[in-house]
Image (cartoon, rainbow, N blue to C red; front, side, top):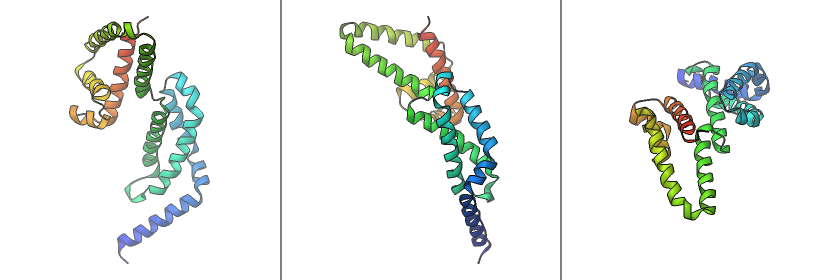
Length: 192
């Protein structure tokens, strides 16, 4: 039996052991999981955080157990591997639910536009032109990367990974820029 085969067998036994005692392992990492969930929730809009906190905690626990199945101790400690999985899992959950702050604004604008058009067909053309002008004006207040990200995400329907590759940034940096730029646009367009 080669060294690699022996290592693979040990990893298999470790995974099996972790899965057999997943409740105990989950309990051991409970404080770290709770801290990660709390950090994530604190970065969400308060309405979303209040509604989704319990579900995000459950989602994080399920992601933790799933990560146990694929973790390879030869590639590093468990927690750094798992923590990235937890954050990604919570974000995916919010996207699927339509409560992710970035995708949420797009859906809200689309729904509002469809309702408006259904009731105001005659006025729609004029108002659409005015809105387009307002958006163009607001886009001028964004820096170059913010404009590229907004256009890539909302107009060209690209992923953050694709946009990041185009402008030389990581997927997470692109996501943060999109969130910040979307919030800026929202403030500029919906001044009260």
